[in-house]
Amino acid sequence: MKPDPISSVVACNLCTGCGACAGLFPDLIKMIDDPENGRRPVVRQDMEGRAASARAMTVCAGVGSDWTALDRHDDADQDWGPVLAAWEGWAGQSDMRHSGSSGGAVTALADFALTSGVAAGVAHIAARQDDPRLNEAVISRDRASLMRGTGSRYAQASPAEALGEIVAQDDPIAFVGKPCDVASVNKAINAGEVSNKTIPLTIAIFCAGTPTLSATETLLDRLHVPKSAKLIDLRYRGNGWPGLMQAEWQEPDGTRKTSEGISYAEGWGSILQASRRWRCRVCTDHTGAFADISVGDPWHAPPKGDVDAGRSLIVARTQRGRAFVERAIRAGALVAEPRPRDVIARAQPNLKATHGAAWARRLAARAVGLSTPRDRGQRLFKLWLGLPAKQKLQSVLGTWKRILRDRLWRSVRVTEASG
Ligand SMILES: Cc1cc2nc3c(=O)[nH]c(=O)nc-3n(C[C@H](O)[C@H](O)[C@H](O)COP(=O)(O)OP(=O)(O)OC[C@H]3O[C@@H](n4cnc5c(N)ncnc54)[C@H](O)[C@@H]3O)c2cc1C
Ligand code: SF4
Ligand code: SF4
Image 1: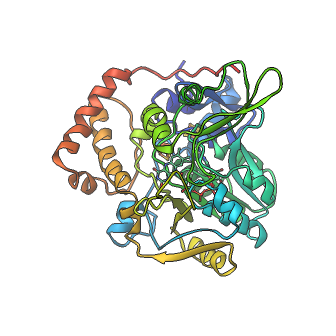
Image 2: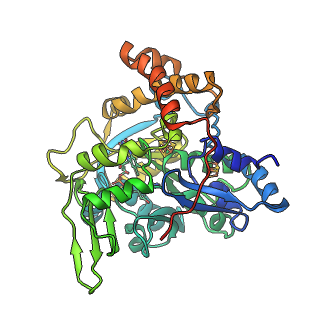
């Protein structure tokens, strides 16, 4: 029998793991954590499941998104998606700034959405309390719950799984996720699965790609967490900028232990980043073009040490997002100063190059018969042309090498990780 559409998306390496399909049909589509392939949906194989899968395709940005309706005027907008305004700043509350991944701006904006009455809840992800290697989608309605989400989790997470709970109730809920998560939520709004009023604000974090659960296990080995121990906490970022990667666990006799903290440069550079899935390598929106606001690291003015006072780069993508950031600054929820719109290119030169390289990776993959995402209306060729000759060549030859090495023509089959 022909696989249902969502299972095909997974099989062809197009799934980002956003969770939107499972969020809309929680009884029929379930997200599972596969250690190598990522957090991926599994569809119940009966008529009802297959029908849900067909309908869920309308919200799936894994297969592509439509940039044609995005408000773009100049090169900055074409390269990054709409950039209405930019700021550099941090959360007005010092513990939020400290705990945040960069400057705690996402949590400060999310908290301001609650206190200003814009939203009654915020959908985001947080580490699972029973197993901090994994993440869960939650809807926070107070500050304490929001604080659980501070600090980027360089691990698989599916915030759009919260869509089910969002549509099942009447309150306005703001949404926080990676660019691919927000793109699916945007598709859900455009498809009429959820109304724009129900989701009054979307915030995206910049994202260079999500590591796998296997990579988290390697990180835990590097932190010398015993296999027999009960993991209590695992942080990848935050508690200073960019923060240390550090774990806390309980020994079988009940004693609590804290690991050494390794630097972000070591954890991301030597352990986590290599595990990013193929879908992330052909991703062409690393900065949240479909969000109202997106937030990343101002790497153009990097921290001096491992745990500096945090700073975030904040970008308004819509008029609604711009007005909201300005209100948050006036209210003191966010401390931020305006920056020229080109700051995004100065802060993230690697992501601009990645967008260009992804254009050629897609082309090289399609040339040998692989499916790739189709994003309408995005101008990537120009970014590829701007790459140095070596990188241009690498984007094509490196793709073919990876296809052979990872046997990317084979169907992806997902299996749930054991406890
Ligand atoms: C996998 C990954 C790759 C990243 N790559 C880059 C990059 O290349 N360049 C860059 O500038 N920034 C990158 N970031 C974003 C950066 O680390 C910060 O998240 C961003 O600067 C916001 O920081 P903050 O202090 O304002 O957020 P905080 O106040 O700490 O809030 C973080 C928010 O992000 C949410 N979140 C955390 N992890 C995930 C996840 N895995 N999936 C969905 N939501 C999540 C939390 O729920 C929380 O709401 C990446 C983040 C992740 C998770
Ligand atoms: S990208 Fe999102 S909506 Fe599409 S199959 Fe994957 S989890 Fe489902
Ligand atoms: S790199 Fe792109 S596809 Fe991968 S997790 Fe980040 S936003 Fe999603």
